[in-house]
Image (cartoon, rainbow, N blue to C red; front, side, top):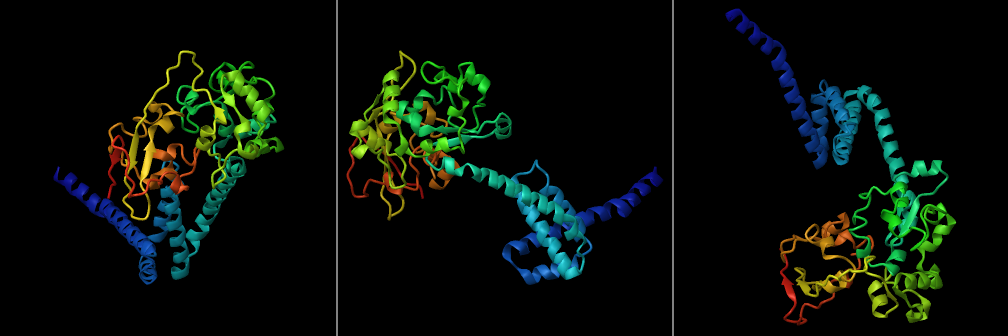
Amino acid sequence: MAFQTISRTAFFLVCILPAMQSLASSQAFLDEFIKNYQTQNFSAQATLVQENKDIIPGVIKQLMQDATDKTKRAGERNFKLNIASSMASMHKHWNNDDGPLKEISPIIKEIVDRAKAKLKASQKWKPEEKFLGNFVMNRYEKEMEAEGLAPVLYPHWLHRILFECKVCHESIFQMQRWSNGISQEKITSGQQCGVCHNGDMAFGADKDCNRCHLAGTPEAARLRDPEKIDHEKIKKYAEKLGGQWNPENLVDGHLPLDRFRFIDWLKMKRAKVFAPIASLEKDYKEETRDNKILFLSKSDFVDHVLFNHKVHADWIKCSTCHPAIFEETLGASKIKMNEFPKGRFCGHCHGKVSFTFSDCFRCHNTPRDKTVGDDVLHREARH
């Protein structure tokens, strides 16, 4: 028994302990390397690389394993890739060993090429989506190409003339891109787009595929430019649905645009240019939430925000926002503008299908010294 205990101790001291120490020293080296990298302490980095030349190849190998591990987040993988590349380059320069750099260069090139291809693919449809509310449905682009079809270009703005947002959201479509599992099979069975595009209410989705599959084609131009709108056709559709389209109320026949050249829907509604339908159900009861909230700005150089619930309730259901996006209790949601571009809070719609939040004064429109009614709720500024 004593001999076995001594043998185990010896094995630990001879085999396990050095490995643990090596691992610890590798991690300590990596931590110090990253610290110098982030603080741009080049002189300390040079000394560090020269003093640890024996362990650098192993550290680089581990970094590359992490950089190519798809279970890790993209940001973490890219960071590890940058560190590995920097370390290999310095190892070559200071220790005259280009082995690790030669080994990882093809891997880095492959990763960079894939990233470039992905970026190029993501930019491909930007012109089609430049007009607010348009989006290209290209998840199955290769399969569509095989069928001789372009991706679908969906024009939110054209549908919005005929329908309030609440007609589709959230009963037919969740208000989140790529979350609905849209398929031709579902559409032709009367679901999703097929609720309306059934050959009766609107053209059938089982015929003339190019009516929708037109992204990147010359025919798509009319969906990127509201000036190309066919007033007579829209009026016919609106009346068929029970809505209204009154182009005679437009100034000079043009749809009103804001300074970013997106449609000003409120101005158009106030001018009674259109009256979209609120539901496909005959016994539909309109939800009403007619109050206002004054969001007090904490910055001296920008006015307060007067939020009008009714303006929003005219378009969307209360359940679209509450409680998933905003909690019901006033002040409970910690609203931050830097979260808007990420699609949170007001950014759930604004900047995608409603006017961009870059148009600051569309919301920050209530002077700080203006007296508002007693019925207005106040939301204190957070500091």
